[in-house]
Image: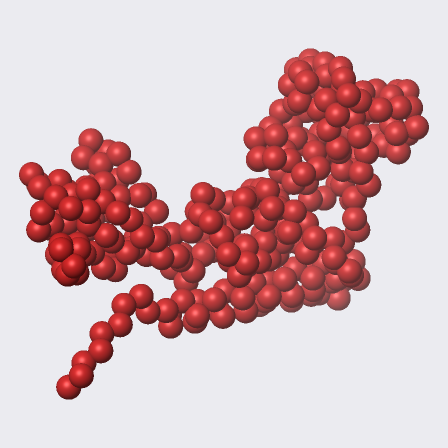
Amino acid sequence: MATVDIVQRAKSILFGPGIGEKPVLLQCAADAAENISGNIVTFDMTSNGEAAKVEGGDVMGVYDAATASVAHAVYVLSVSSATVTAVNGFDGSPVVADTLLDGAIMEVIPGGGVTEHYIYQQVEAVFTGLLWPDIWEYATYSITPDLDDYQVELNAAVEKIEDAWQVIGNTRYEVAFEMTKNVHTSVSSTTVLAELIAFDSSSVFITTVNRITESSTLDEARTQLIATGAAALCAGSTRSPASMEASGKDNQMRAERSASRSLWQDFGTLRTALSEDLSKETHWFEYDRG
């Protein structure tokens, strides 16, 4: 599932019943007439009535951004008729340039909170720091061996080779293998290098354990796991549930901490369950008649 789908699923968790307020959706004009001056951008909404729903101090972000590179967010300074004047590239988001807001749907973020730009960042944080080594995926490759030095480059996401074999005639033969990571790019552009001691030039089939990346094809379980983790981080969760205990100082803060703690616990439960399922997977069986 594409990252954009994970972002939308994370939003559905964040703005679910009892957790967060859903944003107001507005639309920019078909020609938003973007004008950029330093870190200020002006752009037009579809009408004066549409623009009247925004005021200075609001944060607006693109809704359903196709990629992180177009998840623009702006801080509204003022509104005049149908024209919005705002700080461009708010919170480190991609800056708006000419035509990028034409016809775009924009969210007015409740409380100046979570933009899609921020959710994309937290999805990236889950991919890079909260999955491996508990959560991974099997991958299979068909490789033409190099019979000169037996060395081949593997995908950068490969962490280890589980099995390697060739079919010669009608017989399956195990192929000896070694693998090393973090080699110099002059040796392997992916920094992952394997030696496959093939019998002949026919294809070597390998099964590997891979890190999950944004380019992975995700199943339902992994998609829900990543979205839940991103939602927990967006809600303010730290990586230690104990540190999210609510204080008695402020009811709203207590509610926010309670929600983030619950989401983090949900993420931990999903990760543990999926990790246990993965540990039970077997990709090759041997049967001995005795």
